[in-house]
Length: 202
Image 1 (cartoon, one colour):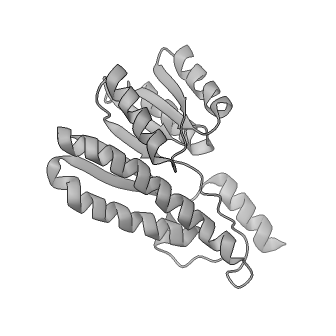
Image 2 (cartoon, helix red, strand yellow; image 1 turned 30 degrees about the vertical axis):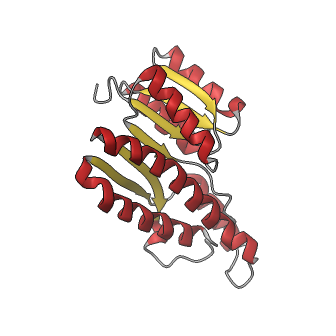
Image 3 (spheres, helix red, strand yellow; image 1 turned 45 degrees about the vertical axis):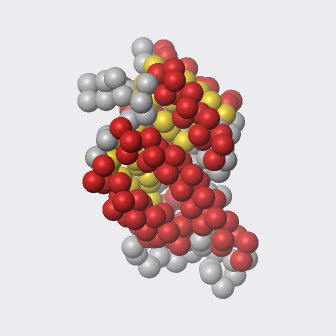
């Protein structure tokens, strides 16, 4: 299996995308370390992985809290070995479906503030460790509003642009050390399109 013997930390592992990514990594042999603010949300994901014969741990970690992120990473490396993959999939509390002229400043800025802080915190923590070792992969998920002019996405498009810019800079700084930094740009998900059609047809 491609990820056999690898340690993968997944932030936001209890979300709809996070749980599927986590399960896929485990199926490919990775020891997955599930992080979220709510243990009840990530426990079923770990239970499913254990039932399938995989290795999973769960931890309550707030990706916005640098101390929690650092302490968790220290614990994983002490007990399990080097961190090979860091993937941030947390939700950013974006408010979509309203025109920019009708959304509040707080609702517009919230996903940008949450997302940029969380990605900075988790990615730089992983980067310091991986660059010292000379290997590792840092991953993120963005979406098409980072490149396309789409209506009614609120602050989500600006958030996607911001973290793609951040990851480009991080890649330029640590790529030479053997660390891969990249993101997946989603074209959307079924629930997003259902919500979009309801909002635009109302």
